[in-house]
Length: 70
Ligand SMILES: [Zn+2]
Picture 1 (cartoon, rainbow, N blue to C red):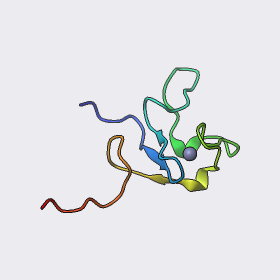
Picture 2: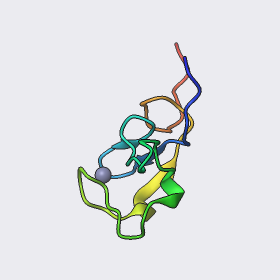
Picture 3: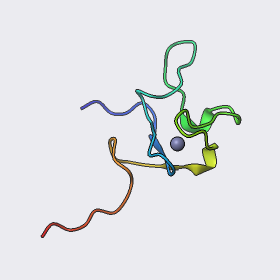
Picture 4: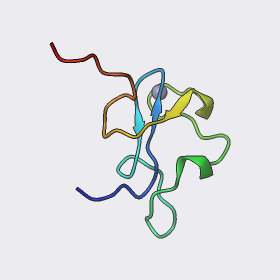
């Protein structure tokens, strides 16, 4: 598993994940870090602003506490 190029962020409304794959690309086709997106950038799925996104450390899963296994 490759190390992510950028820190993934997840949309609190629709769980859209902004990561290496889904990120906007710069002119070198490199993913743009979430924190460097233009202010007017909105979630492409539900259209909310960036303040609805939270940083996540997990891969393609929401950053929520997991219930212990029984
Ligand atoms: Zn969204």
